[in-house]
Image (cartoon, rainbow, N blue to C red; front, side, top):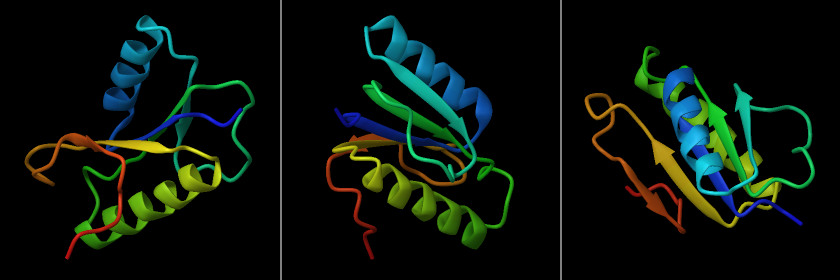
Length: 102
């Protein structure tokens, strides 16, 4: 079965914290470092992708985040969560419609 939750974190520490919370609450969680190139592991409820987008130019951060989102969608995730630094992108929240807003 495909994972339910896909998450994109802007750094390794935030991704690890989120993965730990998900595991604590019973979700089988996998943490990936960088935009994955391989298919997702089987039998996971959640996938957390750790990026280094907090310290790169905004254009690069957006591009990496969108690549991660595409990978999570292709992995079958149906709900998405973005964990970002409040100063770099003023949004912390969950959404089931991760379409970029303009």
